[in-house]
Image (cartoon, rainbow, N blue to C red; front, top):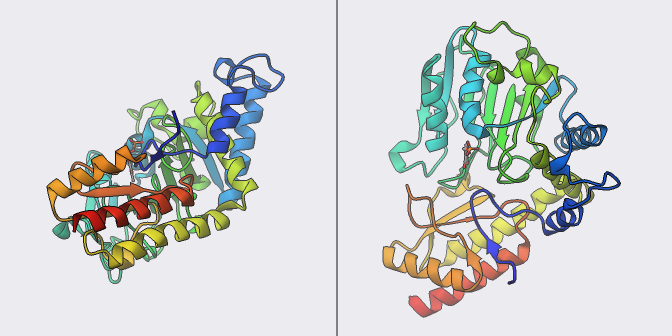
Length: 360
Ligand SMILES: Cc1ncc(COP(=O)(O)O)c(C=O)c1O
């Protein structure tokens, strides 16, 4: 069977070259005589894999020396708890609610801290990013939390809120490595790997080092303390070894293809193609405000449930799969992460044009 164009929101498409290399190395990795999956995480071969992966991510994102990179498990959801547990001093945090992931992060933090929702776009089904001017941040907040790309709704921040010096924490699960960012503007960045980086099972955390050294309340689980993992370079316990190896291959692939600057151009071209078509379509309508459009998750709707179903089903017959929108919003969503080739977006737009002609 041929590979399809997989527009899944995550786990999601990976670069073909990476999958092929992984297939070649699956049975015997280099001169080790074994698979990476079978390797001790304490072996020099694996230490080389994780060290190189970390160094390459540092290079790709220009991560300064005063930040630690961690490879953890538990997905972004675990970060919803780890962030408040580790960053609490005054036990207060400010949240910007721009979607259900942001909301879930707030709900989890509320177990440990006093949370303050400084703005929300729930009034219009999270179809925009609220105005970031004059937000009422608490000067004593331990941090401000944002979800930078809202996977379900298809919005993203095009500028960061000015937090008046309060530490900024960002959930970058669905946009990490999609465009250049200045890591210095953040205190902590986290992302599940399964969208833009690698298979599910690895979570990336980039944390400013001064936030690691702190006294924890007695009850804080050891595994939920950043210090536990930072002190042992992500090897406190058995890390997700194969996932880290795959992330490492993706990092190397990105570096070999011009890094984040190059992929950003590619991403703009892909998303531009799709949005340009949607802007003039008489059948499909983009569902979020133009200024807040995501480069990674493009949401649209025909406004007719039956027609949406027909579109999703016929697209699938044409090798364009996983275009159904999230169950909470309906409609369609094309997730076009870094690894999605331009040809896939061209094929999608061509199919949409044809569908429009046949069904309008
Ligand atoms: C922006 C964002 N945050 C958090 C999550 C939850 O991630 P996980 O399943 O890794 O806990 C997702 C998952 O799709 C997401 O898109």
